[in-house]
Length: 415
Image (cartoon, rainbow, N blue to C red; front, top):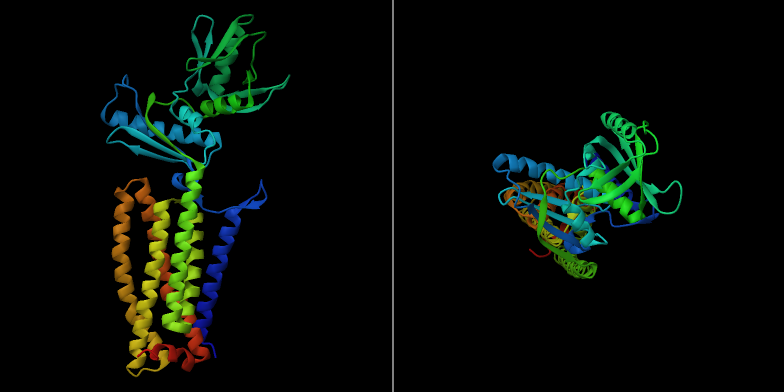
């Protein structure tokens, strides 16, 4: 007969697993394509993409905290630009010690164009024929690419801020039958004659392809860089190399996991099989947590994942050996299981906490790749503590409630 305590534990386990599966299902479903995709974003080394290192140009005279603040603002602008491009999950890091901005964009189809877009100053000017500035990019509230209203091609629809609307109305009233120039850095986007005052707070830029309209609207929306940048290093990771890394990692991971599952079953029988089930649940929960918090999975992250599985197995081995000792010392099966888990808890807790401290140090001081390892390892450790102490215990005690003699034989047969 199942004890009430174990019924409650089983319910908790089932609820947690159901939530994890639901998270993976929801986050992995692509509504547009109506297909299911892997719910965790992949890093540059797995998906391919572009890696760019940017630094202020030599003419930048800012120093100290002023330069650091400008670089922080620049990082935000670059992040907005990448979002506007429609590419997902960029990794943008600040290296204030060396005045560098490091940008990684997985899955970019045109890395060269993306790298060019990232480092462009992108100051928008509205000028008269004499070069007098009438408005700046900050006066534009929104730029949106779309099909041209009066013919083929695309256009950029501009919506001005209240202050920008006022400036634009004054400028177009003053410049009726005169040209007005819209310039992005040194590139002229539009040079047209004003036919009548434009007072509605909107304007449009025509004569562009759809790709150009999308790119330039992204630049306008993100705003100008606070400091001009130059590219000092860049590299491209092709999708073929990324796919090869995924295949090799999956092969290694599957082989390792299968061997671990077989080890537990061969050495511990039915309890080992129950521990294997807990390990599978561990994997589902870990993937759900990583997906929920939008973690990026990299090759070091996969290493952290596999290492955390090994630590979860270690916890189960410690538990089973403690149970075996208690039963062989004369305790009943139920009493031995309870005492074994209680004795094993602090050993598992202490060993995992020390590893967790090391992971936090790596997370704080490490580079992007090291942080990916630290994040996956940290989440894995916390999850493994839950599955080893709670899930495995639930399964073992449920089996002991049903047939204590059968479960007990597996802990004494090798004694």
